[in-house]
Length: 327
Image (tube, rainbow, N blue to C red; front, side, top):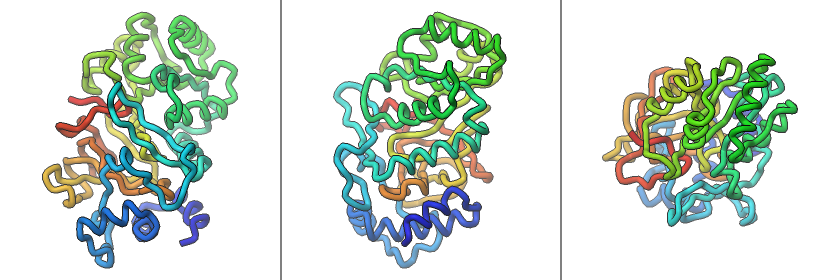
């Protein structure tokens, strides 16, 4: 498989082309990724019979905590690492090409929001800024730089400065996006409630043990009331993926065209379906050099148009900082 040509195709594929590319990538990763190859063989999957995306085996996401998931050797310093509370084992996503990740999130941003230059980008991600190798910080930092707006930037614990910036952006009628981890947004909302019209909040999940767990609907209701806005956006992404899905209303996520969410039966992980309710499987075509077929620890619902909702973590799964909030 010509990886350069494949990479050029994934970001411009049609829904029909997606299935073809996914099957092509499956066979490449089965032959090139040692851990994925061993997993597929252990579950006795006959790869010659795989002719549809729902027949592709999905690698349990826990393998990213214990193995280097890669199609080729990668420097052990080139990786993204998941967040986790004290004592939790973290995932590592080894990165062959950082530019591929940048292309994925940049095109994804443009797909949902338009040109990055039209926005001021703000980041309220204190727990992520305090550690290295965060894919979320990498993404938001690049968006901040690409926006070229003089007021774009990160805010660690300086809530007063963030509040002042938001008020200036509102007065100037400047379009802005505030990416915020859940617990920090709630802390900020309690101390600096304000009315937002031009600034949209993108909640990225994560309580980090700082607050009592709440579901997304509860969090969004608090934020909508505090900031006098009708909508709170959400981002669905994780260390193990190079692509994101966004929700702009009603908690319904829309993935980028090179990402697709499927479902598996919680009691039978090899039973995969395209629509309905169950545990979430993700195909991320941008994961060319790791594994594009991930069985996550989230559960949810997928609709006929490819949009999906996340209902929380699967019971008995280890909670993660980047996870979506449990019900």
